[in-house]
Amino acid sequence: MRSILRKPALRFIFAANVVSMLGSGMNTAAVAWYVLQATHSPVALGMVVVIQTVPAMLMLPFTGVIIDRGDRRRLVMMLDFGRALVILAVAILAFRGKAKIWELYLMNMLVAAGFWMFWPTITALIQELTPGEEFVQANTFLLAGIQGGWLLAGSVVGFVYNHIGLGGVLLIDFSTYLVSFLCYFAVRKGRHVVPRPEPLRSDILAAETAVGRFVREMREGIDFLRGHPRVVMVGISWALFLGAMSAGAVVTAPLSDQTFHAGANGYGWLNAGWGTGAFLSILYAPQVIAGLGGRRSIALSMGLVAICVTVAPLSPVLALAVAFYALMGSGRGLAGIAMNTSLMEQVPQHFMGRVQNTFYFAGTGLQIVLALIVGAVAQFNLVAGFSVIGLVYTAGLVSASWPVKASAAVQESSLMR
Image (cartoon, rainbow, N blue to C red; front, side, top):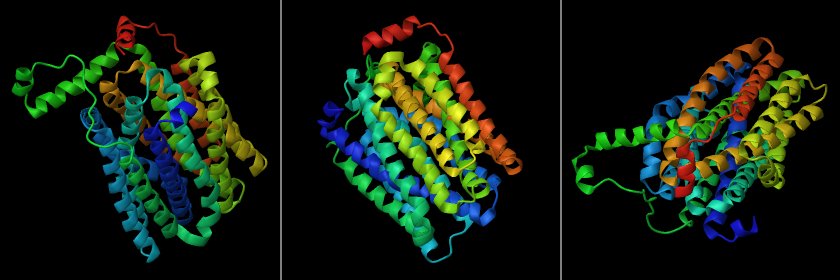
């Protein structure tokens, strides 16, 4: 970790993620609580998740090519700037007492459009900036920034929401995007594009239309996955993980409100438990991954989260539920580091955007289905809603554990890198 901290670019990325996730975590929690209080319906929370996935389903098939073509730092900056403007507009409406539910839905849709393009981009940027032997440390470092900000957000949002309201929370989120933009601005100078091995001859490229080239590059990403079954199995676990984790937002606020009657403070404690566990996972994740390997680490973390998410709503007191959330966060941290590291080790840099977007597309599609199912089930029985999420994590465990032989293409790709 000290070697990672010596790299100025990664230090700025770490700072940007701490700050931006502080704002994003507060935004997510505040909007969820506002919608629940306005509607008293888990189904409405499910619709928040569904609406967030609509732009992703439309964009993800195409944005992977954009990520692999351009300067990833500049793309991240553009995404931060655009999301900041959207959040500022809704914050002004909230301060004036004119924010409506549909406007919050629209804000979430636009911010999610940037989110689903941001995370594949930042992962590809870190892979680009990090030597191959330090992928585990770099991903641990990335998670430390993300979960450090999320931990701070979860620790304070439930306690300050009653004082500053939705408008105040959104204004804080807007400010964090500006700080994040400046951090990425300082990562490096100039325009940097990842070179591709064995480029086509210039006359062939010149003969291609823009559409033809775009289609060819998308097809190259699909062909890469066909020859790399281990990448596919990790990707399936990743998609299941994304879908289940997003569905957790549908049931967490009702758990505090309906089961423990703890209001916004209880919601803050549950988020703080998750964030604490995820942040502390950075202390042991590199050792676990080194000892068990990437896929076994993913399977272990998926199993842990599946058990905890199933039993958390059965807790007799809030403190025990917070402890289960901490264990879930810890499993989330280990899974995130192991998955990102596995992809970085197996996927060449010039394919990273397209490969990630394929799995994000599958994960967002699953989110739509899960959000509707979990919301409807939780409307009648909250424990059953949690159990549905546990089954999805269990499926992720199976995918990560499924025996797959390394193909010749995988070994060749590894040698090339």
